[in-house]
Picture 1: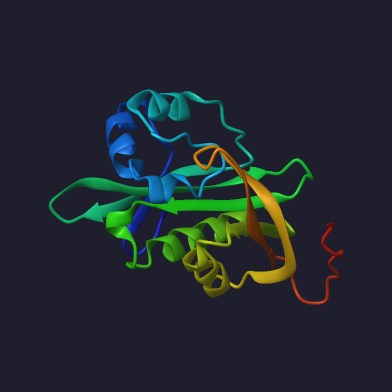
Picture 2: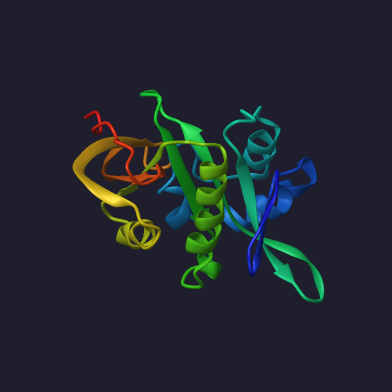
Length: 182
């Protein structure tokens, strides 16, 4: 599965992407806001990430910026994942040199369109409290704060940290949505 936006190509990662992926994510300020990425993030970690099996119903993409005069550049990653509760969570990261360009919003909008095509009723997302920029992205995308915060694990942080929880309904008008489980 692939998705194309005005400036980006969202595509699966391949083994040959490992060096570029490792360079793109090699920033503790990025990795500490992810659940499973270790710090420091090495080439071997990128290789393992790219080789990991993926659930075809939960797409995962590298976010690449299309270039007029060369191959696309990896700027981040995004995907859908199933939480232990069964809820589907949207996640993303953008390399620091690409912050402030709207890539997280643009890529996540394409991912939301894919979630709608998959007929998912809702998406959840979260951000660590010390990463309010991610909360602004989620709100631009239409996610609403649930009013709940919870401890979320971060491998790079070495444990749990408080995160604010959000939800986005993908259901059509007139359909009832069940309340969020705590």
